Length: 523
Image (cartoon, rainbow, N blue to C red):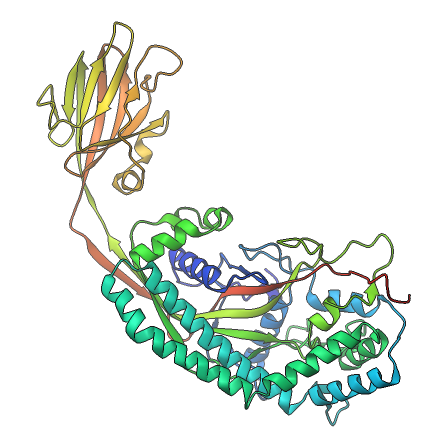
């Protein structure tokens, strides 16, 4: 593992908790413009080192460089966050800065409008570097506050919708919904007034609309801010690697109030069922872990700020540039997009104080073996063969001289597992199976589901689970089984350390077709 990948350090957090976090944030933060990538291996930092303001000591400088490297990796297609560490957004940015540009066609009046909008949005610092103006900074702060309030509203709405508790849904309707809606409205009012929402967005719209008519001026402003094609413009990490400075906003996010979420067992199951197959496959059995009782955590969603690429869509969305012939596009603009840079990380979901509660379920085992002679029954709860057909779990029935079937009792269920490892199944695995009332065919032909060595599982009339091995098929059906009964449940509670801050979801902005040169421009 390289130094720049040290962020992927081990953590005691349970894999089921990481899956639950990922499934939750994917469900909450995915929209038509954004996809969410979920880290399968925990990405965790300490609160004390995950602070990038002021003078940085070696520990914080190292974490800062790791954060910058990580969030600037060009994402692979979510939902699983597995971007290669070889291509970064600053590489793509440098490629765009060297692209062919359309000729400027701004009229004097349009040039004046453009200069006025840029002057409102940006200032030149004492070192000559272009920085956001106070109005733009206040806009972004107010926007972030509104986004958090909007996210809080939707997560509570989602929790109520997924809850089977009528009281919880009623509490949402009469208490939480009005309160959170008012908080969101207040945040919008603050964004519109102290955040200069209309003025800033008018200026951004003006620069965007006029940008295609004057790409050379925009490209010059970006080069003057940061030119990734010049090595001396990077920042150097303590280990000697180079990176472009990147931050999260608000910078006081670790000290601001965080929202708390409690996922009950039904909610966890619902999220797991709704998660994409790729995400469930990445976590394996943990995605359907039936021992999870609840998952609780605190979270904040923070924006990723790149002073050297501000705003990103001014370049990515411009139609006034093109790459050389034969160079592969960055994004094809499809849904979802594909290409060399189909998206970039726009925000990150942070989580802390993750508490996972499990039921520590044990099972008692009762083995048995018998031969069902002709039309006999079998009660796996007590091991009695040939007993009362109304209470039995199985009925071995020969319907003709050459056809037979194994029928589940009226309150039992069956599932055929085929020629699998009999010893690999226990009470936990059997409880996770889906049982049906369909008989198993025992006809002596290719459709026979009860050949020697086959295994089937039974949910008994008394709620036990059993694995049954077909020792020998025939009119006399020889079976061996183990019945499992759930023992007394205990509770296991694990909570992450208070200092741990997890990067639990990477919210990626999807790019339109890029480049998409406008043929109406002069080239």
